[in-house]
Image (cartoon, rainbow, N blue to C red):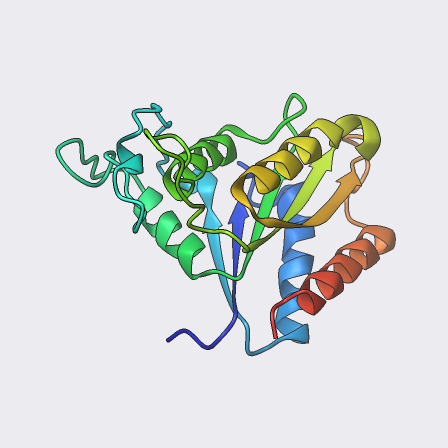
Length: 208
C-alpha cells in the first residue's frame, strides 16, 4: 500500500530555461524543503510523444482500470508515452500543471495530455455514465504570460477550473506571473516570493 505522498509536476514549456520552468523550479525546490518525505516526480512533456486523443471511446469499456487503444490492444503505438503518465497520475496525490500561455491557452503537449486524461480517467462517455477514476485528487496550475494575469491567463484558468469540476478533482489555484518584455529579466524577488508562497500553500494542502 502506498504510504508516502506523491506530487507529479508536468512541465509543458518547450524552453527548459524559460520563464515557466524558472518559476516551477522555485516551487519544486520549496516543496522539497517543506516536505522532504514527499516524493516529487517530474515529466517534461515537450520531450515526450503524446498522441492526440481520437475520441474512439474504447477506454470506456472497462470501468475498473485506465486503458487506451493507443497503447493497449491492436492499435498499440509503441512510441506513445502516455502509459507512464497514466501510471503517475494514478499514484499521485497532487498534480501540478506548468505551462506558458500561448494564444490564451496551454501549449500543445499539455493540451494533448489533458485530452487523453479526461477520456481515460473519466468513465462518462460510454453507453452508461460511470465513475471518475481520479476523483478527489488535487490539482494546481503554474503559468506565465505577457499580459496581466486577468487578461492573459484568465481563459486558461477557467478551462482548468471546469476541467477539475468535470473530473471531480480539487482545484488548488493558480500561480501566474507576467513577463514585462523580452528585454527585461523575468525572475525577480517578487516572483521568487510569489512562487515560494504558492509552494507553501500547496504543501499545506497535502493530505495528512
